[in-house]
Amino acid sequence: MLNSMPPMLVCCLDLEGVLIPEIWIEVARRFKSDELKLTTRDIPDYDRLMKYRIGILKKKNIRLKDIQKVIAGMNPLPGAKAFLTALRAQATVIILSDTFYEFAGPLMKKLGQPVLFCNWLKTGRSGFISGYQLRQKDGKTKAVKALKSIGFRVHAAGDSYNDLGMLKAAGRGILFNPPLAIKNKFKRFPAVTQYAQLLRLLTASQ
Ligand SMILES: [Mg+2]
Image (cartoon, rainbow, N blue to C red; front, side):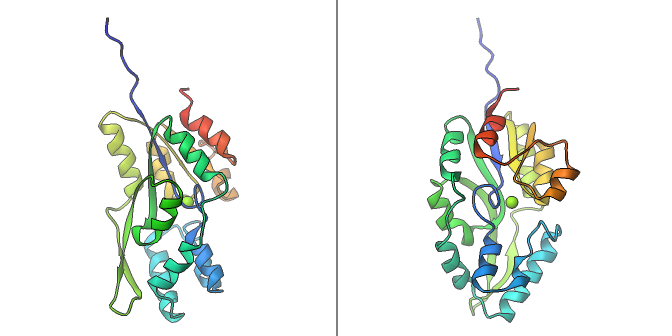
């Protein structure tokens, strides 16, 4: 008799706000810049937000290596590494982030080198960030749809506007520590604040 196996589970996680603090908030704090504190929570249009940030960095004479120094001193959120290790024991985990490989390296190491799909930065000869290169537009949503199309069951978790597409595309979408406005507006997604709850919801069969 043939056993029919359930499709393998892939969990897609947002990075900032779910596993690590918001990188730009930390950079803003270090360089004492209120202008750099805005995130996709404040300006949902990512391209507008990035162009604004690049302008502020130039104005304040902050180069890529200055930002990388700040990031090297950052740590994952308390409990994130243990959560991720527990999740990876039960499912394939892919981190889908709008951050950049030039930023994420040291934090990925601290999280145990999970798989990360994100974007690239462009820098000019003077070392200032001059632009960015998206792998593709709306990459989080497309990654979830692609995984489903090759036979995986996909659950996803995120905290912000840029995660809503992937949460909708996934078989199960969960909000983790979202701002109140998002939590109230998108009640179709369960919202949790603790890693134990998130682990349970991501891995529960029903
Ligand atoms: Mg986030």
